[in-house]
Image (cartoon, rainbow, N blue to C red; front, top):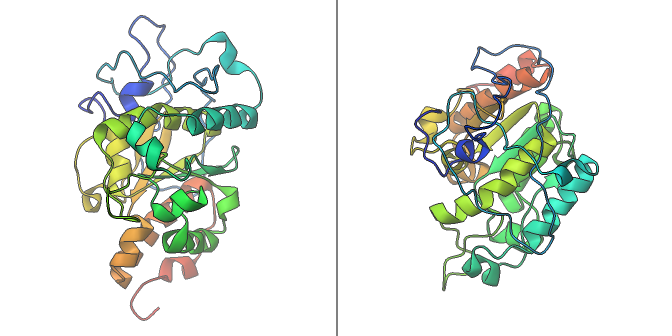
Length: 289
């Protein structure tokens, strides 16, 4: 994915303008799994957060990205002020006041911004919050969240040790159907992408897991089904991205073979993070295991 990605994707929003000095190539090309992780990419500057009550400006120019050019635009002087945690909190304040999608802003219970450590090695990104997330104000709530927590525990991690968020920060409701979840509209995702771009740049994780085809399509464009996307490394901001099925999919398709596919993807993530993958890990969700 890359050169042919649509202009509204995260790659395009992170593209450095042609007039700027060329950035160092931070790409991590897809490679076979390894047991260690190299030094994390150098932290990228974050777009300024200067007015807590104003929405993030939409990208005025969205050029077709060049391979390896997914870096944030040059920051304004205020962007470097404060710690990563302080800047993340300022970004949260901005998102909570956002009304760029008036219909979503009017119907939401809460903005589901994200949670976890800004120093996390692993970042988890979904497409959009569901009704339970909307009520609780945190990503991956309810049964799907419980299943995700179980997966992380087996990996030797916890929700508190990762940074979890979604592309869209408001629940995409269905009028007249309380609790229903619809796919977000393209313009809704596009308005939220600058928030996600800034979150990634602040956390600078070693690995990103994209849960569900919707999250991958928002990140990279296209309509490729998850069955063809999963188990292959992608990248954004020089950070390796592993796509896999969303826990909601596993709850709908309670099949050990589908769980095995997700687990195979997560074992690759463990290896990239430098976590030990034991023979017991390798036997999970296999017949007779």
